[in-house]
Length: 111
Length: 131
Image (tube, rainbow over all chains, first blue to last red; front, side, top):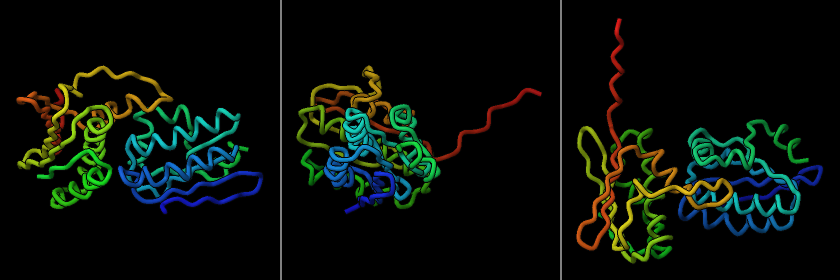
């Protein structure tokens, strides 16, 4: 499974996604992400190991983020590679889910 | 040439096919081709009633052209209006398609849509500077 979930101090949940979030990978992470979004309020999604993402992968992340926001929670994206960050900024999603490149700052932003 | 249905199992073959046919191309050129092709294919799979897709790559020294054909109703993604809704998935696909492929050509050929996504393989010449 290209997704792992870690509980950090301060009730922060770090979701680490890895590999290709393409037509196949996007489907594999959608359900685990939805489960996290349904039960957690402070979420850092670590994208540093994601090699590829297009709108299908983005869709799962945004649906989860909207679910977290609807419960007054917070979610941020951590350290996307340049190619993945270009997809995020081209679609304007960074205006909805902030991007951080420093883990301490990302965690502080969701507490 | 790859001919597939729009089933999940067949769509999973799109990226491996592109990896295979672009293995001789420079790596930096390939990422944008993967994004654009995924957007073109998923747009057909999710929004058209086409049941068949064909993909092929045409290579010349100047450009790589991905030709995507489907049997759905007429739809030109190069000119369709983009509904900008930042928090909704709709619109991202066309935005990304047009960002990563600046040369999109559409033809209706009989009962098929033919989309040609052209990617230059050589760097654009530096603009002339008057001195």
